Image (tube, rainbow, N blue to C red; front, side):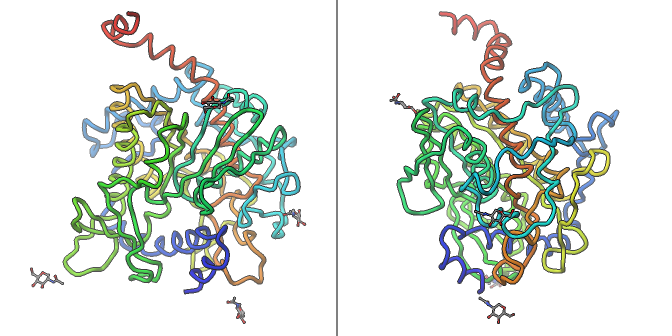
Length: 448
Ligand SMILES: *[C@@H]1O[C@H](CO)[C@@H](O)[C@H](O)[C@H]1NC(C)=O
Ligand SMILES: *[C@@H]1O[C@H](CO)[C@@H](O)[C@H](O)[C@H]1NC(C)=O
Ligand SMILES: *[C@@H]1O[C@H](CO)[C@@H](O)[C@H](O)[C@H]1NC(C)=O
Ligand SMILES: *[C@@H]1O[C@H](CO)[C@@H](O)[C@H](O)[C@H]1NC(C)=O
């Protein structure tokens, strides 16, 4: 297949074209099959919760509980009390961007939209304005001071790598890192900021659990992956114990045909079309993959770090599916009143939030912190931020499809690092608050 040839030739670009191709192709299937099994109305949009006076009938007690918690979550991660930094609008920012493809070498080819002739540049000139407070623009010196002598790992797929490259570019006004990778495999990069003794790494794990491509073709010609839903992906779980911060994310790879294993046995699949194998749908695998990944983190003996779930970032295909001319050609952000999270994106988002909350509770018992880097709403409102066809030369037939999954650099993904810095700044405050809210008995123990 075409994209496999590309993989072999250009190691650095290895997963990106494939991810793009495959995430797109399964969207086609999902729009056909999923609505039948998963009526999306079973959840109210978490972003519309304020306007809903009572929960829809299908909410059970568990969901009530989660909703209440969600209300209280964001306020604790923001400097201004009662301000949810993740709910807001994009507002013009003529001062942006803060780096260019000339000043930063870390931009992945497929996200170097200006290089490939994107004609408009307005998409770089926005900042996120939370309702009720301000989100400061990224301050590289402040960030590096906060992470001095610390380490940060991005665990996930190419969208996670996209955020790391944004971070390298944002920090580049102060310092560039040196490559201290322990393997030539580009999926496992390690960078060191020498002046600050700060280490940053990426771990490639698109399914978060042990997985392998069991059939390069499959029913959609996009490969079938075997997911061992109860087995750790040791490529990252064996490496992260020493890290102070983990940013975990995932999503787009779950759209493809998947075969699910538990206890070494096939227990079902997602659109595999294998006789006698039950189709459990992608959310089944997504939920269990997060459950197992969080369990891995919670069971690490020496891990003392903070785990951030960077929530699902929806794609923005319009006027057709990925392979039917679907594209993302808008040049302005949406206002929050113009769109809302629904369908598969909402289901993926809710699934990971639910698993996050379970992990957060378990983490509390062994003193581990889980935080929500809730980029979903800010990402949802940026249909204009994707490479579209400007992730490559127009005449290149390698990635013919429009990329409405990844994000141009500079671009809206830079804001994810504004969020990250804000959360790091507020971490001490928040920890103190949690201590205060502890059960009196626990506090006594702590004081002793
Ligand atoms: C940066 O973008 C410009 C267009 O704005 C392009 O001409 C140039 O080749 C790009 N440079 C790099 C290093 O990507
Ligand atoms: C650099 O940071 C690590 C922790 O990430 C620490 O163990 C080490 O002592 C630091 N090195 C220096 C020279 O401060
Ligand atoms: C599927 O199940 C049926 C009934 O149990 C059995 O006869 C058939 O051989 C099975 N097919 C495969 C491919 O295992
Ligand atoms: C790209 O497309 C052109 C025309 O469609 C074709 O001649 C060429 O062989 C293709 N190149 C690759 C690398 O597939």
